[in-house]
Length: 62
Image (tube, rainbow, N blue to C red):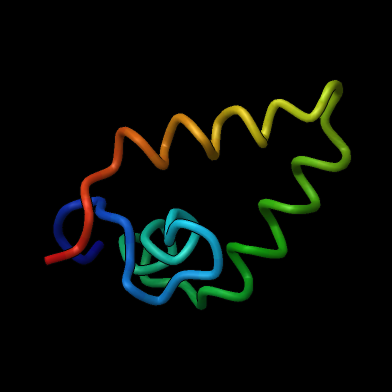
């Protein structure tokens, strides 16, 4: 794992998925696809709420 969990500057919306991918050492597109699939197939789309919470909780990359 690559240090602290932070939002990435490689962002499509807020950089949350890219920050998670950087932290885990995974490819960014894989994390984004997994997030979308998990959000679509989960009951009530709680993924959007989780993304918004992470957007405000995760610090920016310096």
